[in-house]
Image (tube, rainbow, N blue to C red):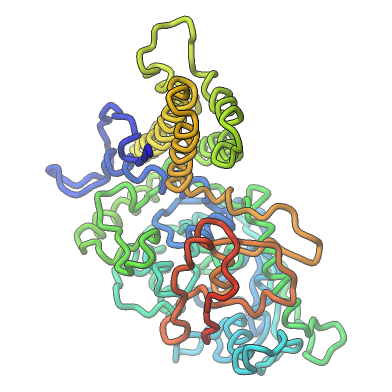
Length: 539
């Protein structure tokens, strides 16, 4: 059986001299070798940026992007009072996200006692679990609350922010807050639940970097906004109905479902150019030869920063500061690297699974020839198809001219990913077109294995999408703190009565121990076995 490994497939790309933030005297810094080695991860970070679905699947983000929220964009804030917040607080891009907080949940944000203010999702799940595993989802809010206010704000100038990718608002100890606590704030011992302390410290950093806040993701994208009196105009602050008011939405399951639905409408992007990412100033831990190994041996696919040294983290942090400053000062239109990844995924995302699922060698052969004939000149003597393979690798990168040091790193990452795709396809072609007569059955099986190994390495979120759901359903992927194990590995269409009870995927310190990895039948995209005990831990 022919086994294809990414490092063996990547082409040797000519060296580029990087300017900008590189460690002195050949010390620790971003390298083209690291970008090539981590090509699929960098590719996915670009492809999933500001997209809810892929950011939920690849929830341990390792990348940050300077960004702008354009003038005129409206943002929403749920809170106890009509007053404009006097300290750093949160803004939501979706109404349902803010509405969930437009109640009085306990200690106000300005309470000097600090600590963790319960998230309404946490409270709902906690109450549900107290009722027992067999109880239906709660119809009425099972926790004390009073009506609050929904604020609507509008950006009255472009807002400079830093987007932190992955599920960066997920308060877990699985690595979802590593880029904030370790990379940005140099804290390796902060509890993930200390979001007020995290926001306050991030905003001290924002003041030094002359930005307005940070974009993160949970069920919906949010902004930690540092000064509500600077850059925002309050358009309204409307009081929410009392619990016994006929205008109130009393069914908690429906409220949670509509929040998940609102988040699902941003699976493929934030929409309406509400956030403009500077891809050319991207900073990723994957650019560096850092130790990103997960200390949890059962989740090796989740990168962590806990193994990076303090000096390495400091170099990365300085790189971020330089990238942010350059992005703000230059104001130049960045290269649309996400568009490049989209062109590549739309070319291959449906066709690669067709090859792995082909039922005959004739179908597999025709599909491989269809993908590769574009790059083959049958009139030339091309030994081993090396020239054709190079043309295949460069095909979607031809319009791109890297300008910044980060552009060069991104180019290397995408080029090495494209090289892996093309090398695998030419390897499959050799088996079923050139050598198939030797042992057709063996060639058929080996070619499918080559492409299966490739898709496992690429790990594109496109392959987890549900398709169109019914009006009373949503394509549901685990988004902290919602979601079971199966919802992470196999998102599916679910209705409102089931979503609120699903939460055993995530691991929160002192709350949920999290899940154990599923059996291979679940991880490979098949339905999880009914008799597997996935647990129902307290959140």
